[in-house]
Length: 142
Image (cartoon, rainbow, N blue to C red):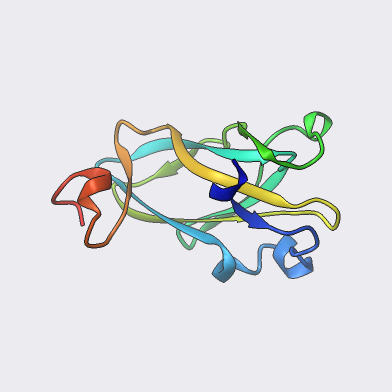
């Protein structure tokens, strides 16, 4: 169902966006690792979503190819599928901030539902702060 997707409209990613210069407009995720680990992410994205920009803390930025271009069908917000995993990257023990921004084209939108730790989930977890955070990840982590 499209109602639970974060959507960027076709044409909404200008040159600065494609150059990775608009991190302030990205969705932000907090991750905590209990020890140094190698991580790979996956996402549930609308069919046809081809690429996203991912910032890791303040150091790394890269374009994440969600599926190979030859396999990218037309954008369909009513159909969601799992992306290809990110390349592996290392996270040290402690807090980290991930910023994710879709890369819609001039003619096709971008939408995603969720982000997951495909590898590294044994030592790293997404952290949600707030008064009801314990409903998501248990007491004591906020």
